[in-house]
Image (cartoon, rainbow, N blue to C red; front, side, top):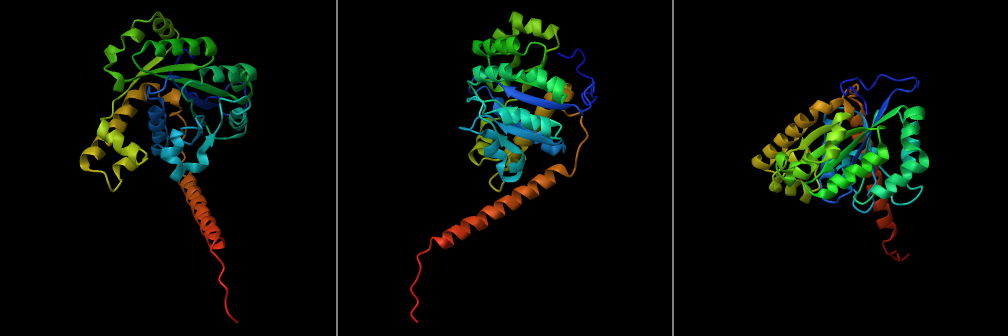
Length: 297
């Protein structure tokens, strides 16, 4: 891991390509909050006009798609981490794309499949030498022992080839109550080599349930016709607190890149065009399925 987390990650190394950043959000344990973290992070990229492409690796329950597809469909892509060859497009697109930030939300129980993918492709080495892409590995944890075991396996796989961030999800309790993790020797060893620790604030369940029920982004949750001043205020405050909590690791998330004010408006416009074309095609198909009428001469 890099010894200086404040170093500007956009400085290219001997590779002539501009440096990119791959953000991988993992947990391997269902319900730890990793998809909530990924959604909030993507929302901040949008709000700050920082170009990002996202990848869904859970085709059975694609969370980023569910909340962001309406306006951001062109930058939501899909891989199948559970089948050999199903995630190859990730590496190909990282090589060919000019987008500086790529966000990958790994599904629960995918650790073994991801390990096979990494080893078969020499994934981290190729990213470093051929693509000039640095990896930030985010492990969202709860208070259970499994979170430590998963983190240990992740460390064994990635070694010093990535930047590590551990996120304590305060939905599972106050920070000091993460005793199993706090007391683990693994934690001390990783802190000594540059591990960054963050917390994700707990969003009150009524506000969370509201955006979940209506499949809203965190921005939309503040403007939806069904919201109220309390829901709006809680979501707004939570997102601001989320940003404040991750600020110490901004460069590891790619927040040090140059904003592009044209990127997301173009994506939204393209999404609108795709929706309109689909609606026209749907209407056309419905018309063609109508029973023909015999017209008397």
